[in-house]
Image (cartoon, rainbow, N blue to C red; front, side, top):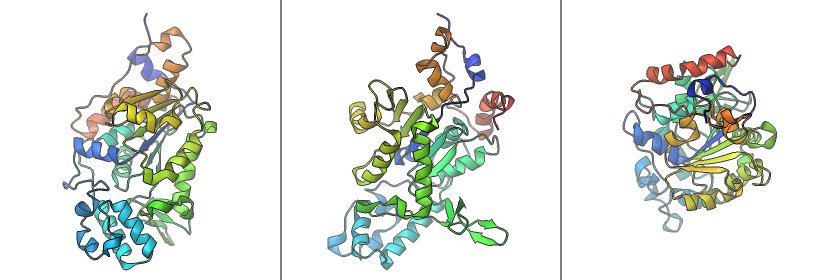
Length: 347
């Protein structure tokens, strides 16, 4: 049976639908593994965080009963002992400096592919402190304004907030001509009490993703990329789950996981988000819905799961090539997709 060709799929646009992508540390690690940070900086895990970020000299002065090899637990212990201590303030300063200096390489990264794979009806939410997502979003904006919204669920070194203006923007930038600066956002929270609603900026970021995940927004796809839903972040997973609803309430939406962890572990970890067979597990970005149908992930969903005709059900994918050597090459490949969007009034 003949189906919808690649060229027909490029021209197909749906007003409805939407795609939410949630990023964890694995997404940044995957991106830098493919094309490293410009100056060779490494991304740490919670287990090697102290060494890589350069906190060993500080930890040496931490009382023995508060120490822990896992940074999150160490910070939780310090916060419980004295949330205003000089040690905590110095740790926060060094983390801002380490991640704040990070830069994307000049060649395309997975973050550039990701930002270009979505449109303004979509959202990317990240738990990561590194500036890579924002840097990719800024440089891709030179090519098209029809880009996804962003949420920074744990704060971000690239993003500041003005409490006076109730606005966020590039950290350190002036909000308006007569004053107001985007101050650095809070990054660290104690493991046992990550009460996101206590911080105004973080609360706003969470309200955005909760709205996007909610049934009323009409989101048809959710992708979790490199986020392990750690036990230490029970509150975050609970907030996501409450927004998404029960599997019975999301019986038709498609849940996707990009992760190198074995499928049976991931299936159980995200069981509360998945209705029966409506899920996909992929171990690399380019085999995902984002890599196979960039800028048409919702349209691909409707074709496969709610087709209007038999022809539409057999839709040919439009996988993005992985071997671009410049951002200009990446942009040019996406140009036919964006031209169709402009013709149909999407800006």
